[in-house]
Length: 320
Length: 314
Figure (cartoon, helix red, strand yellow):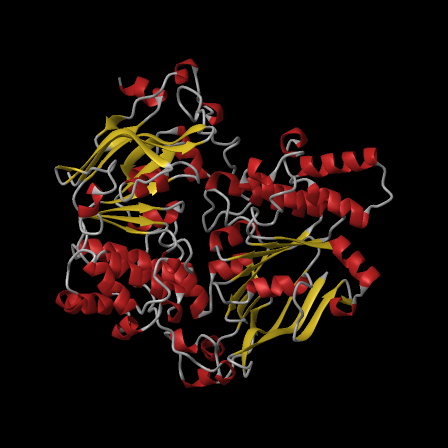
């Protein structure tokens, strides 16, 4: 087990009370697994990703346990996390385009980042150059400023930089969303190659685009309103999802070959609940076509088949 | 309805504006009555520039944009206002389309002040109600609210309702759903399809091929300011002829098929745009002839492509 997260709760402190953005996420990732994390905006997927890296106010750690390679991650303590950040857990941030220091040449910035981890730049330079070749960036980029690179090049540079110390877990937050389709494919397949070459052991790919996950992820965790809704292998999630939310979400995606005149798709009526004071019980209840009395209680996230976890009373009843 | 001929937009770039950048280069297409035409292209293809030129937000460099037979650049004051009664736009980011310090329905008030100054309050309210219901919103839920109190889908639908208050004939929808969540985007897309059934023409600008296929009758594939392929949507998606279109079709992430082809190389050869096919540097099929600029040739009645290879084959 590379990463194991249990009942992780992270809230945002506001003047009007706590926003329960992440309210009990439980899942595990195996070595070499690429897990996709999907959901609507505001479902807590980015909060989850960032909590594993840098949990700072207004984010507030409530409870939960994060084990990485049988070691407890002290995510509630930003100082203690320093030992893990970048070397054990690393992130490709959402806006990688603007993640680099614009006033430094990329090589100098890299050496400064490494110096903060007490690593000499020259020791890693050969490996760095090998990886630049791998992502098809010219080695000259080290003498360039970020502004001289295109969006796709910056994205790849940040990828190389984030994985330079071979972290055990890489969190990739919306890495492909701002790219063109052709570049998107290349960057996505590069993530897979980084895993295959064991630069990173396992990966969480956060995105709202499920079709990208279908291409690269081994498993998908669907989140809804701060809770895990369903986790299973990619094939299962796409082809035979169990949770009503996943089902509606998958069926609302337009595919090539679907036209409104022949096959009209429908969205999910309603809106996600406000997380400032969320309703008790299943948070999808108000929008769920299959809701019944029991949904007033909170559904447990249970394994209904091997490797297939669902938080829904319908399924819990069927497999009890 | 809308006829675009040899439309170009040239930007001056470089230190003293010494170089020229052809953002849109000699583009011609038409939007017919009750038609949805999608402009599909990656960033830098000039698709938004075309939309902005149609809406008169930026000036064109050459060519013509004719709306119902009238050249739009000749429109002034009164006639221009009439044009805006018929043509309106909705843009990508619903959150920044509103002024956050005013209530969201201020966009309706502005329309009333500008276009319907004589209308009495009751009739206006009814008109707003009808428009809101047409876009599937409950007036009670959205009126008198600030933009931050509404969701992206609601804000986007308010903007479409705002356009419907005028008796528009053409809606320029520039990436209207790319910022919305999967569960709400399909509702906005269906809304556009319904509007088409009510007699509206839509210019649908997008980078997402699946969305383009879902809604449009005609498609135009753009690359670096040039039309590479245009025609009936079914024909383009069913039988893509241009190597660029094929590459797009292959690399778009789909739910029914995994990627098979190797990803395309990142680096495109820089090529002076006047010297030939814009796709020359990245094209796997390029041959000598491609150093000349290809022209758009009709393959079938409803399908044209700008590629020398296709000309050679036939």
